[in-house]
Length: 231
Image 1: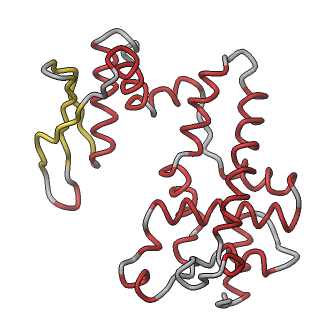
Image 2: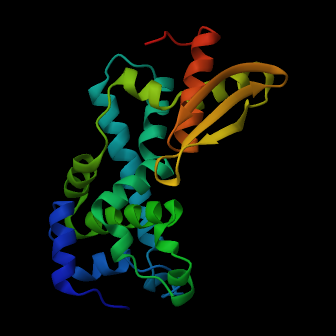
């Protein structure tokens, strides 16, 4: 298995808030299949395990924190907290993009910066903590880095999913987002997005990324069709 310098790994352990008893677990979690094709030599099995630990941890956390919320709302909140983009952001905060071991081809294409790979390696690290220290330790690590949001804030953040769910229920079709304008210099670009359903204009949003603009357009649409109060 490729090696990570122990001194560098100690920095990662500090960020995680967990010190490994068996460093093999962490090093395996950081090894992409492009370097270890055999299932026992890459992080895919740990990713499988870590995903299950993550789902249970977040489910229990939400169940206890929001005793009055119905199952459907809890499921939406869990989906937001464990989705790929959220986990990739956590991985970047931990610096996992600098620790992930990939093959030469993947390194040339900067695969370690992709959300999908960062999400996978974070789940693998969670699996490694579970194997090394048990569920309580894994739970502590996961909750330490989980974004802290209240119910109202989370519904705002996930406006795009709420809007899509609404139209899937009533028409079995999602709304469409169109980029209508890009303005400003490259270092401070602003994107303008409109959201439509078939021939009906629903709303517009602006943001420094397309995702931000789409979320703002979705929030605007939810207000226009009466599914969310304006702030």
